[in-house]
Image 1 (cartoon, rainbow, N blue to C red):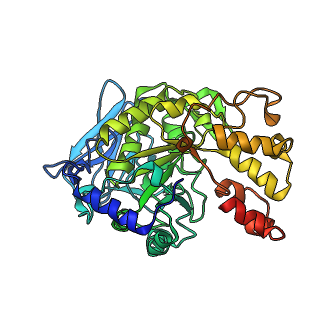
Image 2 (cartoon, helix red, strand yellow; image 1 turned 90 degrees about the vertical axis):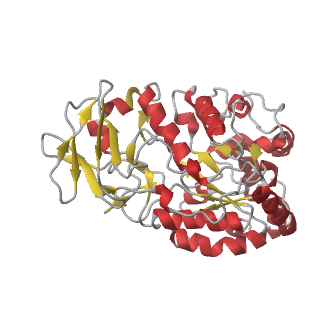
Length: 432
């Protein structure tokens, strides 16, 4: 991505703050269908989709449980008077219960109680921030846990801005079991993991970044749920497909309107309630119903009109068509793989597909985006991979030398500085 000076970023920030029609905070706390929503009158409306159950109980801490009203579409809802911070669960006639699948905060990890959160309680310091053009984006991927939680990431922002970073991208933060995780085993997509901090600390992180003229992106996982704490698998089997699987678990059934709405609203929730500037969608090649993706992009851009909101793909299929349907860019694995081979000489696994004529592959990646645009691919038993991409702009591809996959999936986690310690000049050239 194009690099800009701190002076240019400051000028861009001043311009963003001066836009007369920039979005205002009333978009926070939008009328989402799922979860516990604090209503303007002060009551809280609880709503959950469990079509296989005729009766669902709302269990609020220190109160008698109450039966929810079942609608014809399998949605159960109830409106009660309670305050933000109230702990609750959804119960069943057999005496078992589960957290809210759309929980905004958990008290006690993925098996604990859900908590009512009022997003309008946060006063944004930079409410008129509208983001930055994609061409000014330099991404720094961050694992919130390794950085010391949301407050730890916030403490590093100034140094990253001075380095030239214009966007931090948080690895997934959806609540996962335990205290340590990459984030790709999340089971409560709306709840920031309490190991990293509170919703308020996350909002403060985003707010502080905007004040420094930096964007904040979030990595989201819409292709599967983690195994532990996935109560939907047992109580709402309609959420999943039995005819399709993923490498990480049951495939999510995006053919159902309620499932589509659950994840579309999740994207809007992060972009509106937390004012993230964009999302990185993990492994969309594992989403069977590809028609949902353009629908999601269209809905997001319509809801966030007036802001620079960027939707970034990870897509092993190299499907260029999605980059013409509302998605800003794709992480270009091809260019990573060929440069990694040139730097390290490694040629096992998928690197074997780039070991022959690597200079030609590099030239094609720089000029056209994807290296593989339909040609047979080594790990696909000779089947073709990719579609033509030369017609797309260079900005449709994220050029990267390392990310979490390329270090974390190695047995010893070596980074390029270690792998290229005998070729530092080559690594400097690649970075440049």
